[in-house]
Length: 274
Ligand code: MN
Ligand code: MN
View (cartoon, rainbow, N blue to C red):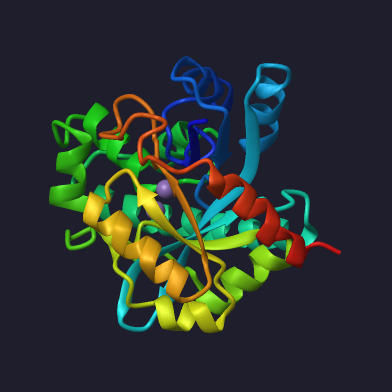
């Protein structure tokens, strides 16, 4: 039973709507997907509705960036979170507000340097969802500043580029506490891509799992992270990190997540439900 526990939609920086993501998942025979948009659960309801009586289950989820000393780009997935939990809703709203402020700063800097881009256009591209750098990148492509989204990141807004502004993020402890309080399971996302330097801190904060089966992990990575999870009594999950067509994204369903991950997530989540 193929499953994919890491999928993005237009609620953040994906290019397919939640309904279209469900159709894409059905088309490749997936039986379970988790919607894990950055700093929002806004795609969950639409995806769940689209999945109804179609033989596919949608798990509610979210992807949070966390800030830890000596580690950059650390992402934590919250799987099976209650997307109506008031504390989570408020936490995510704060994170989206700081994303918006950051996007405004970047757009102002770009505009002053002569790159034609305006904030209203960028916000429209985000469609009311989490504003990310990809929305600025698309605006820069359409205004002719750069030929492609990749070039926008490489030359202008990527981590080491001149118009990059850091995103405000939670500490690992706060992120994991928010996930647990919303009844969800906290999983370190793609450690083979962003490193495992934060693991010790995240373990102390109550980390539940490691995404060993990410699409960008080699077979070696997958084995190594599965062994690491076992050593620490953590569950193993996996997913594609699908972002949709035109996004240099792996196909939905990539990552070879074992279907046993779904039961493991459900079982682990029981500890956080009252
Ligand atoms: Mn990520
Ligand atoms: Mn992701």
